[in-house]
Image (cartoon, rainbow, N blue to C red; front, side, top):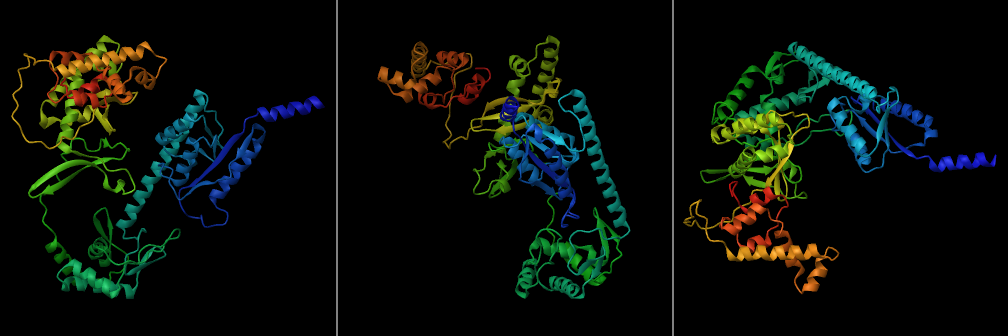
Length: 563
């Protein structure tokens, strides 16, 4: 009896506690106001399952992770985001759901969730669907199940869109914000005479006043506000003074003429018009007359070469923008302004043409370097390397012509991550005819440096085949760097501070010299031959924050591909 008690005690000590979090979701808000709704039912079933696994050490986390009224087609859900953050922090071991489609109905999103769970050695359990994801057959079953869940969601979406289109063609009101002048009763628009008079008054005053701003000022003075939109859940919206957007939406809304609009086409509605045809036509005529002329008949294609591919050091997208000075327009890539709030890190900004050319030059260098392509894509087969070099040569030739840059860039460049000291280009293997199963490959280049303002000066460089005289100060600096490297390697048990005290030298200077000692052999040879860039001086090299990668060093110090 004593031994049995001791064994049970040891078992309790050894058994690991499994922290379980319950996640529930419902696609619509219908019924959430009930005392016992679908989310409660899901949670109750999950709690019972966790209780049944108590002998395995399962314990329930009391915190709730619920998403009521959120679709499973994406991961933009507050409850799911909070739960995954807890998983990343190591606070959750198992996610318990009623069915797999409560967690997600997208196969791609499910792969991302599983990857995050695997990184923290966590897992998930479906209460009503038993399968083992540790085996290949179990994973296949799960993927098939999720594929059908995604298919069901997409078919349902198509069916709803078709139903809405067919209903609107018959003139039925299919929901949405109720326009000023109507109220929705049993899914039908019914005129409200007091509001209808307000709509007609706004249109009549628009015809009488010289401009829209004057009308906005008059409406604000009279206390005329937008319609209050009453919602079942959440705060009501509207009831605020008219702004330019809401005013023009009212003036152009065909609903007031008894129409229902769907994708730009107007159909006869079953509701009654509250604006007569003469007033409506007069308002539309004035809107057309006051509309500013278009500069072009159609929207011009965005000429930004890297649009949609750039992200700043904080991962925020960078978009094309411009600034005007007089008649000249200056184009830039800049962090999206709605993401660069005052309390956020400063926005990143680069001149568009300079950055385009910098990236194109980097790609030319890569595509012209046989060894770089072989190392970057880990090509061991001679035939594969030959095909890749052939495709690389064709792309490099296309990049010589600025008029057709967009095509090769689209083939080979997936994205660009701007970092503090470099640009990380994601290169598509498919662009070189290679297997792209592993995704894009990262290729780092030096970050574009902003040039300080200087007076234009005439500079006569020596011909390329006649190198200049070696800079004695640079050569001496390289010799000092090698001496410091030998000093450090000869006494590996001592720190730089101890070596500096021993030699009676500055520790900061030793650190800079040690960094210079790891310059690439090509750069050292170029300096000794006098082929270094004119801007590379002893002071600049001494204070440069050199990257470790030799190719990045060459870009950083201004060496050309041929140096």
